[in-house]
Length: 314
Image (cartoon, rainbow, N blue to C red):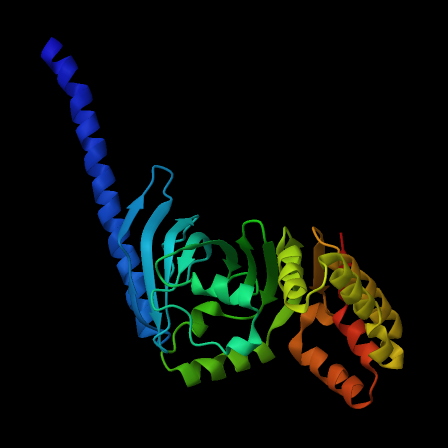
């Protein structure tokens, strides 16, 4: 009886370990299947990874992801975490991705040295495949095919002590499952254009949060021009505040507000928000005619009203 009581926990532990290794094997097979589909789509030449494992909360962690696209451009992601994954559909109805650490094994393409400052050249030289840039990308989406193909997505791109760029979109009447069927890039582009003509885009929003990027850019330019950062900042703010002078008459009020907000953003450590919430729930077909009519009539303010453009700095 005592031997049975002692052996029972060991059997349970062994079973749990067996289940864990089985789950990791299934996870690797599933990842390989998605990689095969991605390569077959004609977008990538090769995708490899060092390891993949699943956690007790069903989160998948991929390490050493190396991607080569059709132009032979290569990049490596240190870690990619996948959660809230829908495995039951070829195009996941839900997914969350979190990528950390990026490097370029072949380095950056050749860049005209006259286009960047010496400080920026020194920074770009560190991206040589040996060093990983501690950037982060977080992405998630929810897709509801039975609800007019409602698709909500969100993505954050960030660099420590520099910036965070956040983007959110909502679309309807675009079948993402059908868009992923074509393996011909030209056909896929035609399908996308056709889908957009029947689509609704109720909302697109962007926000850029500064955590040191403005200061770094100004410092680089100030060093190159032999000026102080404060002086250069004031010059840029004055130029930005004068942008409205070049705007059409019916956009003067909007341009003044935009100039004020951009000038405030240049002060540093602020967030600039921009959003489109078009009329007609963002229906492309219904928007096309009035926007084109306003454009050819030179009534640009009408376009701003149709798109319901909003912006602010905080």
